[in-house]
Length: 162
Image (cartoon, rainbow, N blue to C red; front, side, top):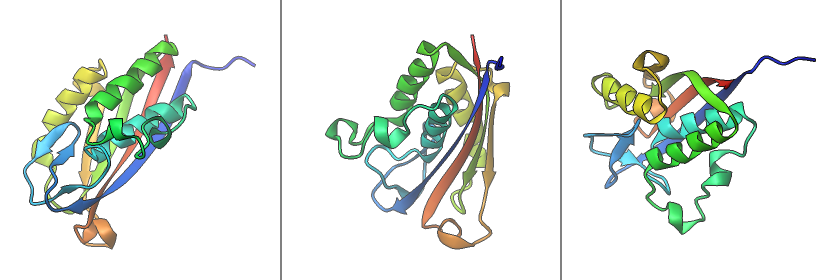
């Protein structure tokens, strides 16, 4: 059976909001009273993108590659982790066609920062900005995200064999 040279991946992440942490989403520092708690910088959007890329090629997930038990990843810049994963994808002979993402946060408002996030991600992933979709959603004050206790992100990615 002949397979097409396209693969899709889906990624998801959620992190708790805590005081005395920077809020970094999509590689952009966003002014806010709280930040995301995690072993690394807890960039929920980048983590979802990483897992989508890894999933597209059936590779181990982000927690396996960059475990929170390893001190070398303490406060790691998630953009650097994304660069490592993108390099792995390219080594396997794949490039990214496009990615579609959702950031789900009751607060702060994400819309002012989305153009900067798109620019940063397009640069790192060697994409046109038109190939990077980032949408902002709320939870209408429902569950932990709606109560401003956490922020989550979802990603779908399409990769293709070069």
